[in-house]
Amino acid sequence: MSLRGADIVVGLSRLLKLLVAAALVAVALVPAATPAAAATTVCVLACDTLDPSLAKQETFPVPNLNLNGRRVELHVSDADDMAWASIDGGVTGDSVWLDRSWDGGASWDGLLGKASIPGTWTGTRTLMYNITDPRDHKRGLVRACGDAAGVSCTSWVYATVCDVLCDGTDPARAAGDTQPVASTTLYGRTIRLHVDQKNSMAWASIDTGGAGDEIWLDRSWDGGATWPDGSSLGRTSTPSGATGTRTAMFATRDPRGLLYGGAVRACGREASHQEGSCTAWVRPAPTPARGAADALMFSYDPYNGWWPSSWWNSAATLTALVDFARATGTHDYDWVIGRTFDQNKGVFAAGVRSSDPVEGDFISRANDDAGWWAIAWLDAYDYTGDSRYLGEAVTITSYLQQYWDTGTCGGGIWWDRERTYKNAVTNGQYLWLTTALHQRIPGDTVWLQRATTAAAWYRSSGLINSSGLVNDGLTSGCANNGSTVWSYNQGLAIGGFTELWRTTGDSSLLATARTLADAAVSNPALTSGGVLTESCDTGSASCDDNQKQFKGIFMRNFADLAKATGSSSYLNYIQHQSATLWARDRSSLNVLGERWAGTSPNPADWRTQASALGALTASVG
Image 1 (cartoon, rainbow, N blue to C red):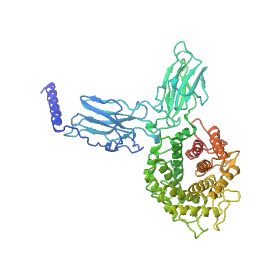
Image 2: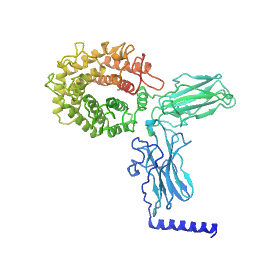
Image 3: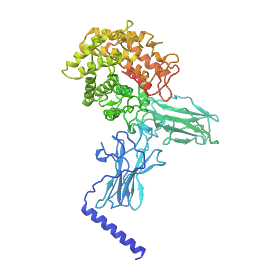
């Protein structure tokens, strides 16, 4: 048989298969695919290879592809930040897959979830894959591709970043023009970075030059370490007869992709030379609190649902983030609450989350660690109304109740399972938690009785010294141990007594809270030069990973008292902390350090960021 004759036979056979398939299957069902093994698995709200039947929504943001009569579609669920691909109207052996690119479409991980149409079917689909990877600070693009007597792909989805405004917006629409870092010069040209803080947009300009000079923006999702999908954005040349030009505006936040706090810099080149020059990197900040929250999210690990690698600090940090959302009405980070809960409610061996084993329900041998999680889930309950968070707080606080012991020091909660120490932090938490549960459980009397008992014990225990400051704990002989006065112990006591006063109306409780607050703002043990200061914030000392977060916890509880009393002195103190740390303790990337007065040494990490966010949120409230 000739080659042409063979082609005709193959073509007729293929047509027959199409007709038979169409007759047998009026609607093409969609069998699942075997996932590709080449690409690294990404886990954000869910992990790559999630079944599309579990998608929270289905949209089609790019046009379908007609591939030799087959329909190739890209399906996207923004609620999951995931996508999948399908092919329909095909024949056995036709295939479909996803490509995912981390550099704006220049290269890609191909054949993700590749699936072929099986016998008797006319279509198939892939499994779902994440579009972006916020843990590793990578903004991704995806497209659907098919192979049906030829290979072709849809457009990449979400090539343009959109927040309040989208990439490419004219700077004439900016809500303001600030220049937060110094300009740079190159062969007499001035290169400037301009920021619309309100809308988190940026653009670049070049001046005092001539025709052919170039200006552009670089955008980085990892604080300026790399910018594979954001190089040379808006690159523009100065036209003939002009001495300067500017780029369009570009976004620095991608809430849809769960990426916040993108950094930008302005770069330029003089026409007759190849080398360029760039400004420093900047993260815009619509408000100080929003800027701090965006920078804090840089360190969140959605794969494991925490801020690695500190167990109790993650609970306190989640509380700071929820407080910010409640105070400002910002919902961008709401997904973090459920992700943290779902990924951490289980059992973990020692060294995985904490140095101690975590035995489920956020409980370990350190009672104060469990207490921070109970506080976080009560805060999450207040914000979301989701009863599972209230239930979790009840479970944890009921566990802590087992360690209330009147046989030693007449009462109080033990700090640890081994019953070695009665300290301020655990008992401050217990007072706040028992009061908070009573407030949230209709008809409760049991938790209220426990709260009033805890308050009476706390005031008589000796934890509060003659200066109105809370020392760290009690000796084995049940006396104040004279150990360090930490801000978070002071704050927990202020918050606990304030909340119980709100519940009972007992004015002596409010008086105790005010005594503690007055001591904190006036005593150099906690306030130096008007700025909240730990003992490890002074001289050449440095706070450890626990101590870095204490001040934000103080501010949360101090703000509660300020709201309850309306005291102008308390409110002024809060505003002073916020203004000082934003002015003295902030980098161009909105990173906030340990020392709010900005003195050195001043280490910074997500713990110091969460602490500062607590102060900035207090000032908003």
